[in-house]
Amino acid sequence: MRALLVLTIAGGSVAHATLTPLVSIAGVTPDLPLIMVVLLALRRGPEFGSLAGFVTGLLQDAAGGGLIGVQALTKAVIGFSIGVAGARLRVSQPLVQVPGLVVLTIAEGLARFALLQIFRFPAPFGELMMYVVLPQALCNGFIGAAVVLALAWAQTVRGRLEGGRP
Image: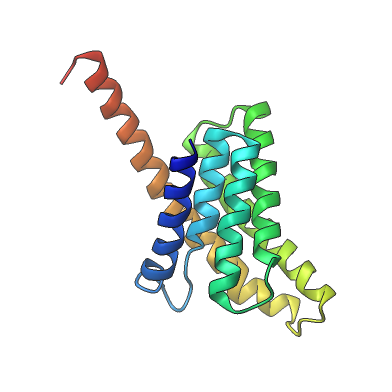
């Protein structure tokens, strides 16, 4: 399990650093670490989601050059929260996971904005929501839908192969 966590976090951070500039649409890039944290927390639970969120957020903070710890804290809280909700509500349907990812992206953006306001970050709330958080939430929704569908397809193929049906 530790190797899976390290591989996933390292792979997600490398993918975020290298692939997101390639898939940006009008300057909006998806938050691949957040997508990864949400999907891991839904599948592995709150502890795994919290740890994955903290480490990926810390790597994002270090690479971004901003305040160290802001994204680490918000992603850890999101990972823990969705892990707890996933265990209690049984949100295994893709039609629940993708809108949940969009809502969590908005919540993470609001939490990050609130933390930055403590440090007197000069950003107007309306512009931040309109030009950063909401477009990123939609982008995360589309990318998350593709990832969820790919995981469902892989699980179906794996079940068929294990069941003996080609």
